[in-house]
Amino acid sequence: MILLISYNLNNTGKDYSSFYNTIKSADSWWHYIKSIWMIKTTLGVDEWNERLHAQMAPGDHLLIVDVTNQNRNGWLPKDAWKWIKDNNY
Image 1: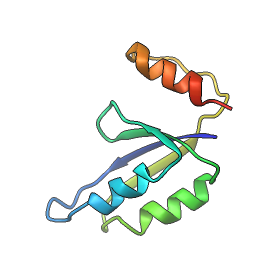
Image 2: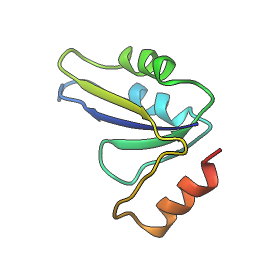
Image 3: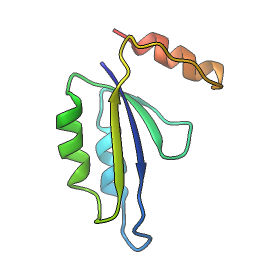
Image 4: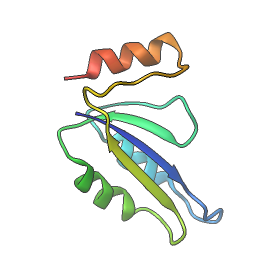
């Protein structure tokens, strides 16, 4: 499945490298827009929520949406649309 992860990380004193490394541990990932990632994974939104929430600070926000086989549109570079097409089950 393809999940879209969007977030606001609001604690300027926190090192969020473990948060980003957790996202990069997905089977495949794409990141072009600040604070939005798309990942290819066999894990669901609940599992990813648990993984990422553990790396966050109070006051941070997180949204994870399954976008597998969903209608999508927008203004993205060609390589982004290629990644979406190539990684869609």
